[in-house]
Length: 224
View 1 (cartoon, rainbow, N blue to C red):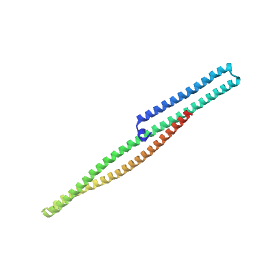
View 2 (cartoon, helix red, strand yellow):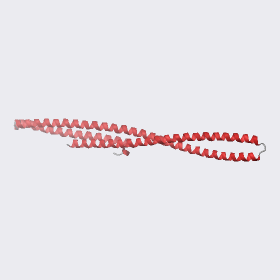
View 3 (cartoon, helix red, strand yellow):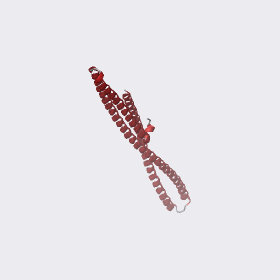
View 4 (cartoon, rainbow, N blue to C red):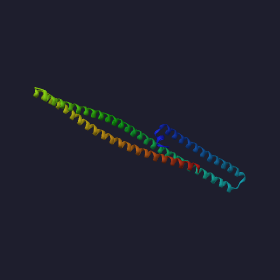
């Protein structure tokens, strides 16, 4: 198992199905073995009624009881391991869903940050254009002041235009600062989301290791 396979729900579904089938086969083989052993001993017991002594009969009965107890103990252990496997599978599924949610949120924040960066560039371009226009108006104002006979009227008109443009420039400057603050906040959220994704990946890796350990214990028990 790997983080890449955990991200693929089809692979996880196949792995869980294979584990269930494998456990079912092991349980069936184990029960068949013990049933055959018990059946053989019972046949020996029946035959011993005719040929063997009471001591042999008692030994066979004790052996049957031991095998029954071993079968019950193995069945209980296998059931416990199956429950533990199911619990780990549920935990992996829950962390996988949470990982998908955080990953989608991270992608959304990245897209929003890119949009805000684009808007910020547009605002910067607009401010540069306004600065250029402001400079042109200042030059025009100087020329008009020197060349016009009606200096007062022209001065008021140019001053009015200058004030309007200055107000527009200040408004865009404030908007630009707000966009920068929002962009910084979004970048912080994106950093937190990436950190959370890393934590979730580490948790999934731990769960995978636990699942492997439980499967290994299950195989050892079944072999025993």
